[in-house]
Amino acid sequence: MAAVTEVEIRRALSGVIDEAAGRDLVSLGLLQAVTIRDGNVQLVLQVDPAQGAALEPLRQRAEAAVLALPGVSSATAILTAHREAGRAEPPRPQPHAHPQRASGQQKEPLNDIGAIVAVASGKGGVGKSTTTANLALALKARGLRVGVLDADIYGPSQPRLLNLSGRPESLDGRRMIPHKLDGMPVMSIGFLVAEDTAMIWRGPMVQSAIMQMLREVEWGPLDLLIVDLPPGTGDAQLSLAQQVPLTGAVIVSTPQDIALLDVKKAMAMFRKVDVPLLGMIENMSVFICPHCGHASHIFSIGGARREAERQRLAFLGEVPLDPAIRETSDEGKPIVLSHPESAAAKAYTEIAARLWQEVETVLAGNTRRAPKITIQ
Image: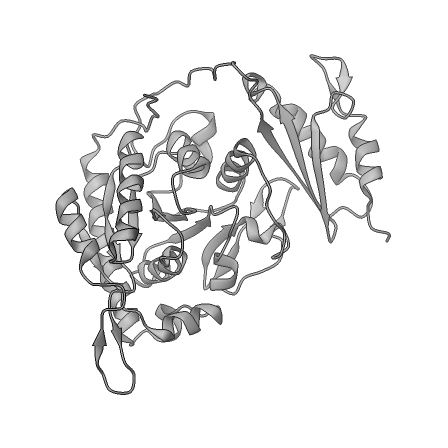
C-alpha cells in the first residue's frame, strides 16, 4: 500500500466543515502543520483561543477524516491557539479541588490518578530526567502503581533513558496506549516524532501537546504520575500548573551556587501558581574515585541541603556523581533497575521513600485550593 501524502491529507480535510464559519478548515487557514511518519499522521490546527472548547468536535472530525485514508494507521490532531495582540485571555474558573479528584471536563481523564508530582529544575544539565526515571522505578519497586510523563517537549529524554521507542498504538485512532517498562506506563513526545526532529513550536502548541499527552493516554489506575518537566519556568510549567491539579513539585539541583540561583526562580514560580514544594534533591553531590576511594566535591557539596533549610523545605537526599549512572542511562537501563544494590541505586531508593512520605502528607491534608496563576 502506498504511503499517504500531504496532498491527500489536505484534500480529505477540505471536506471537514466548520459549521459556524460555513467553510472547511483548510480554506479557513486552520491547518498549520502536517507530519507523516510510517502511516502515523499528526495535525496542528491553529484556532481562536476563545473557541478552543467549541472546536473540539471539529478536531475529532479532522482526525476521523484522515484516519479513513488508505495508508493511515493513526491520526492525532492538536489544537493550538495564537492570541491576537492586545486581546486578553478569557478568565478561567478556579474551583476548589482535591489533588486526586479533579472536577470539570478537562480533568476527567485524570480521575484514576492518585497523585501527580512534577520533577523540575531551574536550569538544564543537572540530571533531572535521570532522576525522574530512577525515582519512578524506585517508587514502583515499593509496590506503587507509577507512570511517567515526559513533558520536556524540546528535549525528551525518557525514551532513551528507559529504552523505549516507536509510536504508541491506539485502539480508536485517538486515545494512545503508552509504552510500558516492566508494567510502568510511559508517554513522551519522543515517541511521536523522530529523535533528531527539532521541535520549533510556539508556546500554545507546547501547552496543547502536553495536555493531550495527559488527557488522551490510557494511563490506567495509578497511585502516582511523575512528570518530567523541561528546565526553567516556561510555557510547559505554567500550562501544567494551571490546568492540572499537581500534588506537588520536586526540585533537582547540583550543589554549586550558579545552579541554586536558578532553583530559587523555579521555587518562586511554583509558589506563585500555588503548587506545594515537596522537597529538594542534590544531584552530583560527591565523586568517589573507583580506584582509590577518594571523595571529590567537584560541584561543591551541601548547597541544595542548605537552600532547602533556608526555604523551609524537606531535603530528600543526595545522589553521587557516579559514572555508572551515566553509563546505565545511556544504555537505557537505569541504575535502580540494572544495579539495585549499588550505592547510587540505594540513594534513589531512599529519596523515593522520603518523597512518597511528602506526597502522602499533602494528600492527607486535603486543604489545598486548585492551582491558579496570578499575574502581577
